[in-house]
Picture 1: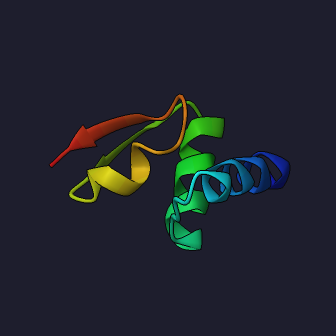
Picture 2: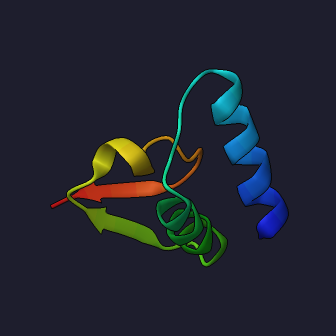
Length: 56
């Protein structure tokens, strides 16, 4: 999982986007477990490719 988080973080930084480390780790964990994320912070989590995000 750590490798995927590092890759996503690096890809985002290349295009000038930043996601909080905690949000990235939560999102990667959910992705790994095939879970969706229910959040009010849709903007950050939508940056994680393949993650299912449910707005609250």
